Image 1 (cartoon, one colour):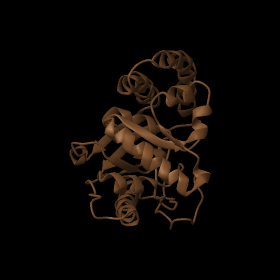
Image 2: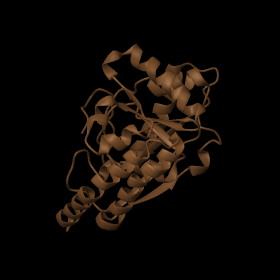
Image 3: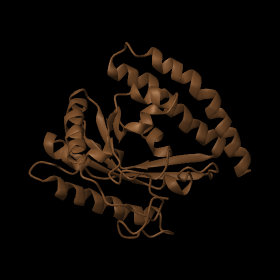
Image 4: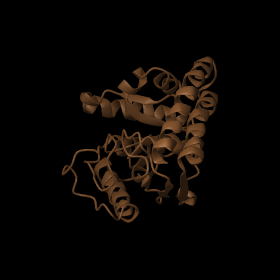
Length: 248
């Protein structure tokens, strides 16, 4: 049954993505926020297809922790599921991502029109400055900024060093950080064709004020909250110290 469902889901993606990419390209003349609302429809459709075909449901805790103004979200990254599902229950958002994703046919074309903050991670401090500059602009435009501080998908029970980009942006702009944990990787593993039915729990933490705090302090506070929640959400795989394992 898992193989049949996963095959049907893959076929649905093949049929859905190219025509939606053409629709996405047609939104080019529209304002950024309107483009976002149209193009993010693809993500919402895919997440609902995953529910109908694969049996992947979700539960969101802590929505009342979201502040009234745009903020920086620091989130765990375990699978492709959360990159799409966030668009169902979080305010309009842009993601900080590696620029190579924009080169993927169809998917990357639509992604480029959603005003992401695409960076060259090999540039070090220059990449941090790019995040701060472009992120501040997106925040002024009314978008929230989603950052996966570990920089890549990490299997449940594993962790990497938290990079400073998101905390740097929050400190530079004075907006709060919202930490977010989840266990999507238990059902939709990284690069896995087979996906399991079940319920993803998404947990949104209290906002962390950035005023008077430096990026390292902000980063440490967010990491502590996220990893504590991860231990509860993925109890069968206790997280090893940062750097102890590669992404899964």
